[in-house]
Length: 175
Image 1 (cartoon, one colour):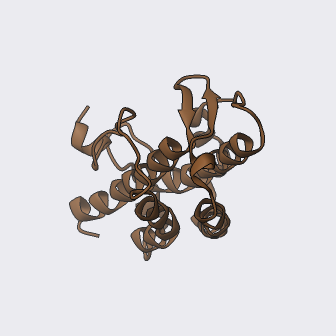
Image 2 (tube, rainbow, N blue to C red; image 1 turned 90 degrees about the vertical axis):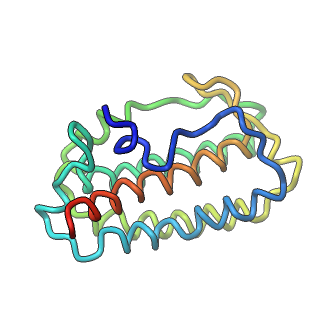
């Protein structure tokens, strides 16, 4: 597996410390992500949308639907952690979700506005959190105890990660 094709912006570092000064930039990345993704797929036809970003990887179409699915789950995890004491959250098999018919063949025009509206609401919530709220936690079945500030950094990375899959594919293919 070519690491550069799989992780075009590098792997996420779960051990990093997220400072209060970093939060506005991370929130801005999440706020801007839907427009960045929309621009990344602008003008692509169905054949291009059905092209994997790397050998054995998801198609561009699956990546777009995955972003909506994953970010809905993250938004819910934030809300659970803000309203419950270190709740256990459920994982999901993102590969199986990406293989469902709506993700494999559905128009990206279904997930792009969903992502845009979700991110508007999400960033409104994120922008209003207090220092104490950023320290709240939840229990993830695979990662373990996770703080909300780490989840913020993870999803800012996630936005850049998948947008880069698409933009780097476009560059390699000359689209």
